[in-house]
Length: 284
Image 1 (cartoon, rainbow, N blue to C red):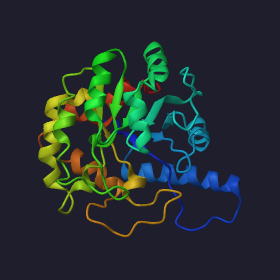
Image 2 (image 1 turned 60 degrees about the vertical axis):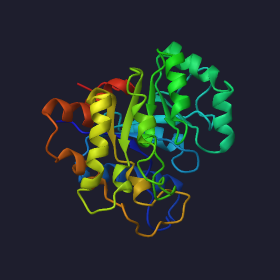
Image 3 (image 1 turned 45 degrees about the vertical axis):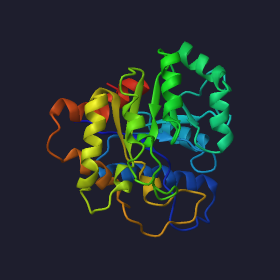
Image 4 (image 1 turned 180 degrees about the horizontal axis):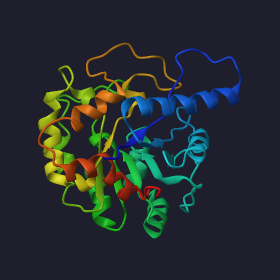
């Protein structure tokens, strides 16, 4: 069974790299492939973030390894035009709506309508980081039934760079309310960061079961977000150990190895849904 990680950024070397930009990029590509291999991941979608995972660096890796790496580009950074044009290798665009606060007001006032028009016209999926804004995402999805939306990180605030909600899963009903909207999919990324127990994080399973039951595996994408949950995002100081911190392999196997998932559900959740929703067909 193929495993596709639907949400990664870029690995950050643990030491300063004094040997030049070209060799740093070479190292970054090799680190990424080594991490995928070590975790048992066949292919990955790099989510570009200005200053953290620059889109040009992500695209460079995707161009070298198109069978294993593709890219989602940030619209708000200007790398993808509002007309919907995207460089080769980009599967879709991402909007960070939960920060800064003016982005939420821009959403409510129709400030992203040009992007949504183009995305609908071109069939481009739009990923949204929208903690606290899922009712607005529901309104958007209902108003634009042909716009493909992907909710990042279960729509929940997650450590280590954001404090979890109180309670951590308190926002889940807002996500479940979107399940009746066929144009909305959800990434099950970062769930172990909300766990209060050790691997395999059994306390998150009931919540994920509710999501899978509501949306179905054909609208759920597994993603690790391994470089965020490890506290090693570029441009941020290293994060000390925290409850819920976990490895790339643990992000995969806490779900992959659990009972209760049928073969068809596993195949969809861990690759098939990402390929279909993001429009990234496997190479022959």
